[in-house]
Length: 335
Image (cartoon, rainbow, N blue to C red; front, side, top):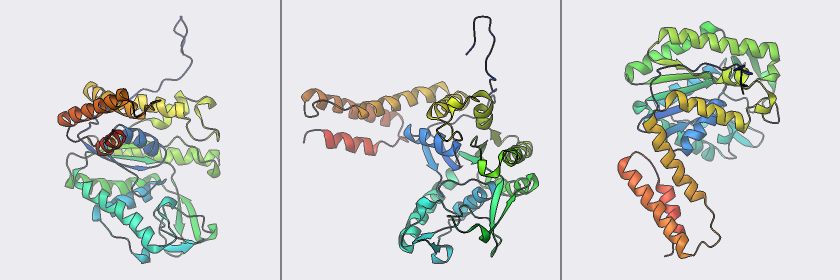
């Protein structure tokens, strides 16, 4: 984006230096919105050991904190934690993807994910949290902050903006306890670049500023444990052109997400991790190949080579999970 006389036509956001690496061996838990979903999907596709949003998308820091406490305790949801509305059972702490027409199905969906996250919790190397908004909805009856309103009438809630002090106080207690139980844990905080237009643009800016100020305080309180990746600044300042947004002009486009991934990789991946990631991507590309003649001997040999690649990589890196890919190859191979 520059011309021969080195005039720069964009604001390049500097990346943090010398941050701890993210490796294939480590375990990662991601919660939050936008960045957590987009980058989490790319990490998952490349076989990182990742649990992404076991409560579904969460937007505000307090709901993310409550989800973490639930995971840490291994709390088991019961019928009393659900409510019925518009033909489905819902949890006020979960995304609508967990809702179901029966309590049994909803509770199964919820508790299965909590159990899985709880089991991996003591072994976490990275906790990655993306905050989207400082605005919360409190239930008038209980005073509790919900993770999702599920389109209930607005008069059932009080909407307000969290203060920097509230967020810092909540996370000082939360992170202190987590670090005491797991000294190797590192925490990456990001702010979602999605603008919450319903808040109005001035209030959206105040919301994002509140989140950024809270993160800065937490970095100062936990200088060797809490880190920040500037996904918000990269999209807002570096990719400010509307061609980097989806059709709604609010969410990052696929091109913007790919660019964020490149900057994320540049920040957190070693050359060894990038090489291993390239080998994983090669296997996935091979599996995505659609042959004209799937029963031909050439394609059968091609599948055998994929299995061989997976076995060699599995021997070298036993923490990689390729069971589904191996089953797919065997299904396509002639019996």
